[in-house]
Length: 423
Image (cartoon, rainbow, N blue to C red; front, side, top):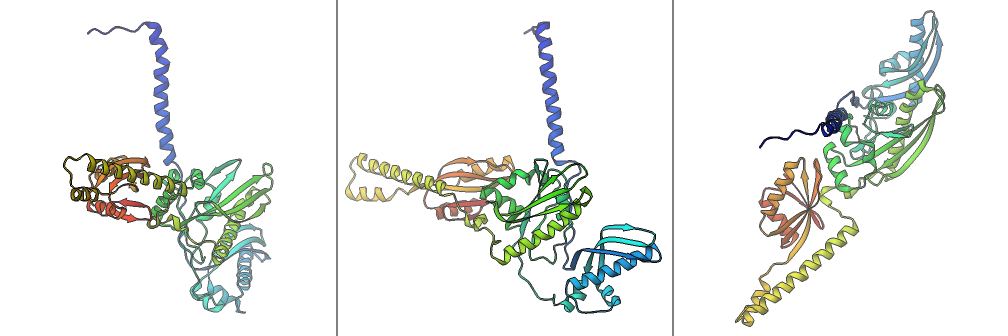
């Protein structure tokens, strides 16, 4: 068949549409690539149990700039040792307990040294002198999601932020809180977003926590307000906890100018650590049991719908069994009794299955449908890269369904009214 050329007017109108489609494809690919590429992620520092003291202000002089700095560091070590209630010791012995001096802010002059310093004492050497060798209670691993809100925009790991850096640089080894700090690079920037902190789904949270080896989640929020360019910066800090975003506490800090923001955020991280530690001591930081896959919990409304559906299916099965007994020619009473006992109870069950990709969904549906006793399988929700939910109609009890799926090679966790399966 010969092709018919398009009218010139129609071809002219179609050209902008084609160009627009090509442009959208190119830009769409660039956006998807930009979501996981670029300068993202800040690796947390290695944790140690050393004793850190921050915010030591010194203002000293010396014959030279170098001597003034040495005098300032020596003075900071003495002040830090007194702050942690160390016993009286000579300056040389105190210096032998110090493993590092952190320069938070300094100004150098020909014979003057003004600075704010941090001092790190080696716990192995200093712990026995200040009574710090004892064991202290530790929290369960807690996924830490530092949210920063500035200019009306909330971010987590979508972009690098000074708030993320403050948490990455926090030395948490001596804390009672077991912080799980993602670096925010690669897939973290897609999975852990500001919107994720507003989710309430236990299934979604349980899948994320399992990937990071955490038991629950804490969300330290920093809301920064800039008075004017170059002016003071006010920080409002809020601590929230768990998938229900429960409030734990809050406080406010103020930086005199933008140059002091990093110092303010580092101070805020230490305040958060004290707040979380107090919440742990008060029993308010216990892991949410509904996040455990071994204790699959459904919302009351969903559980009621499942129970109503189950009762309806049981009634329909009983009616079909009765009709079979009545319509069977020549059925004897004994045969009727055996026929009423033969049909198994058909019920609907909820099955959660880990589906890392699209192929795993098809594979799971085929495998579950092939299990003995399964009458039908339907998808309630699909989450590629997460946990999908299936509705399985099965002739038997929940325990029988679990056994049938184990026979198909699945690892099965049985809850009160649902199953969780994985390969």
